Length: 263
Image (cartoon, rainbow, N blue to C red; front, side, top):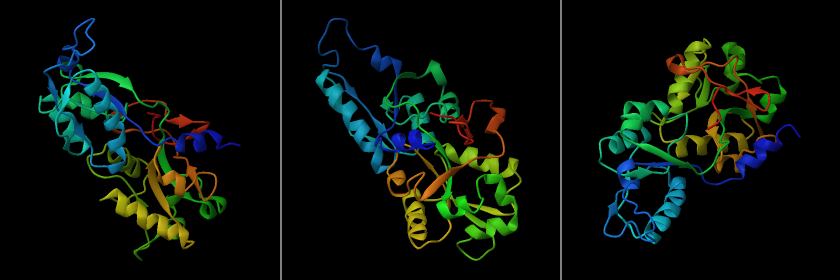
């Protein structure tokens, strides 16, 4: 089936690209089974509950190497990168590459930090609509430039499509905001931002009430176990590849132009 790969990817339940200060990594002593003995490392986590597990895996590994793991700080991704770059924390397990490349570079880049390994490759992001809307012909974000089509996704009576979007400071909001302008959708689409858990819960409820929905999400993430691509929702394309800051990259997957790079 066309969406076999999408379905497989959504089954995975944890995602991160871990990175740490090279100074911390440099403390390892060749040949020692406990190179971290006497060293306390300071983790920084994101604010998503779902991201705690991947950090727990790292904590266990570090403890087995002799490190003491301090109490984690919890901040949004942009602040997280700045904190590690400034030496206010040592590592995190929630760097999305390349989505967070701008955060990484703004915080000092390779001169301040090192990316030391990937948890999961092939993570997707993009826009989805309910299956009824997809079958009715809404297959591209650009379709919402038509006020009549956009109104189909109006949840608050203002006549505009309500896009369940991305939290400020996550990185994905930069792409969405750029694309809404680039594709001429400002007059017909509202980008709803805020606590993602609350926004997506409302979106799920609307779909279960047979209402039309359009939303942003990523994989792997539990949302795609409830709103299942190829079942009750479907990925839609964007008119063409366009990323913020003039960045050029491959944003297609399985022959579809999703608008976001695979991370």
